[in-house]
Length: 218
Image (cartoon, rainbow, N blue to C red; front, top):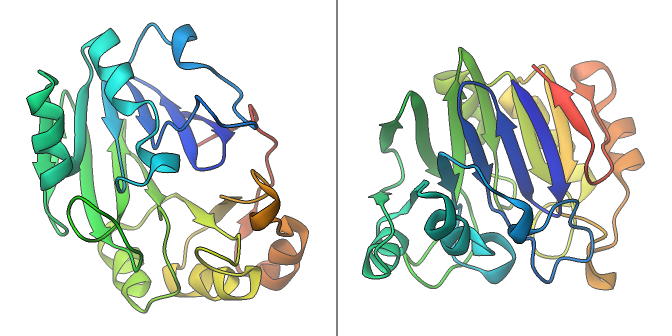
């Protein structure tokens, strides 16, 4: 599986299917891809309905016919726009064309659905954990135990979610072999240090620091 960080919290997963997670591209000064340039998507996963996560998800689904997977209330909103959607709850799992998506706990606010979620995506025998926006929570230990992700994408901005110090503790709880810091430096308010995060994680996990448009293969 090839994973591209598109900037902020947006990911593109490529394997037997093409999956986008939190595709905030329009209005994202870091974005390595624009919605108008996307011509293929099979699944779009949204962790919560804040604009910097919901982003261009509806537009991508309308353009490509992709299935949206999100919390129930976001799914309803998508269906009202004639988008194919699977609206599930935290703890729920759905399989869309061979892509298995589970929503897991995240400690963060939201409008529709009332809360945020993290997302676990399994495709081609590989599992990715995208934490969405979350504070540090012991729930991460269960996420690591129950889903065994091969790689985690964790926010480190320290204003809306975890500081590098807290995100490093999240790595310990998850027991994940590889981790990529996300959700930082997009705007002045969320300046943070991926290098500090890497130093705090130490030998517990391989920390991969990407630039927008950078990729990792698992």
